[in-house]
Length: 572
Image 1: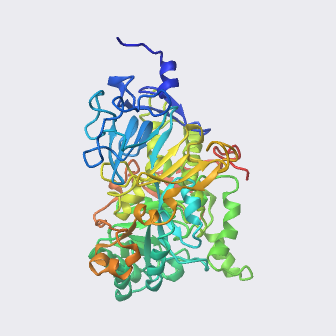
Image 2 (image 1 turned 120 degrees about the horizontal axis):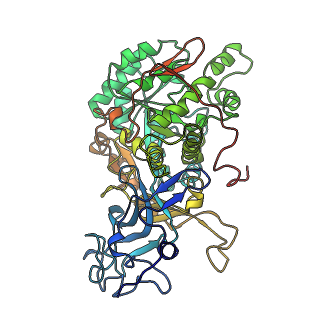
Image 3 (image 1 turned 60 degrees about the vertical axis):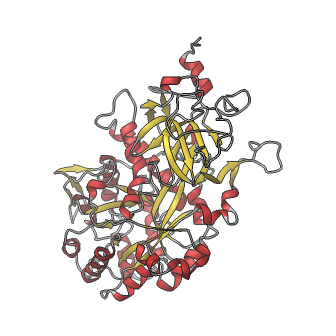
């Protein structure tokens, strides 16, 4: 005999279902569940706890071992937000540290379940009950590795993969040099994030860059401080074409060796990843933003300019002087710094993000950005744009699903695609690493509840260890067991090129054996490959007034005076 529940009663027991809407913290963004994988068998939700159904012979399959097909871990009754799949309610299965699939999990002898999502006494169950939200771990593709503590700040905001360069707290540690690569890889045997290191592209001759390829870099970075000239651009792209990796470019603010047109000529229509494409983080002044017009250029932003607020312009001068080793007493150095700061292009950057014309948001951590605010700033920007621009085309029923998925893609799947690591991270497609962030809906974007690496907890919000329960105040972020000892090597990966592995990288760094994963070829990518962020409008910047036109129309937006996810969530 069936039992009828009102929608409210169902919500209290199992959380929201298909058609229900959920507010994301104080952002003003509303998501709607597009599909519930338990909709055909309401009441069969696999929930753990006192008086719940995750028991032997009920929700648990009797006697089934992992070798016989039981999942290692299952997240049940979760709101799953994936940039490709969409926004659904269901269960997420994990085995051997990888995603098995999304669907209905449980005991096939008593429930109608999705094939492969079998739960037994061998399965760790994390239940979402009151509407927990699950997203893929964030991918920050622009880190200056200046401080090992950056990893903990990143994890605490939902970033599980850090890609960048550098090797310590010197002035603007940009790329990881050949001699430093081994030690940086070794250091991450005790830091629980996935990593990849950029090699320095500051050479017009290929030998030194090719040596870095074989030493374990993920890609190449061109930076104006070391010289970003047409010749070094051509050399780096030639090497990238040979080995299949990505080139990241921080173009020449001073236009010393050439202007934007010269850089485009040197690129020659080949794929390239343009950092902080607005320009405050560095790049051809004043028109580097025009790179958003080109299909072969994959543009990304860094979080100091996102979103545009009443404080954005004022804070940039000191940051530029500090990270670029400038002298406050030299007029030329001050002019260099000031040439990068343009309120009009910063404002237009917000709009271009909302249109889907800038594909990625990263931090530029310690190179002017903040490691622990990439995810936070992304959702603050989405919130600001909803307030200022209203619903996106195609959004119906009062939900913001299209905007939410667009912004989610900016810090998950798109940076993974551009670097050739999207088979491993950035989404919940089957076979990818189970790097997962779990949020309470009221803290979404600001403070995650749990951070999992390959399905095992490495960090969480937890109370006093001497208290009677984990929820006893003060609740702070603490390392979990996956962040200790040999678990780190088991749960975290280093992304490199296959040539380094073929050249014996694992034998050269035996303590990291088994951590390395090869990237796939990135040379045929274009902006068309960017999920939900592939628009290529015609962008023009007036070289005198700095006003921005998009497809012939002047574009701007006012700076925010108040932001979501701010002092309500942080004492600062």
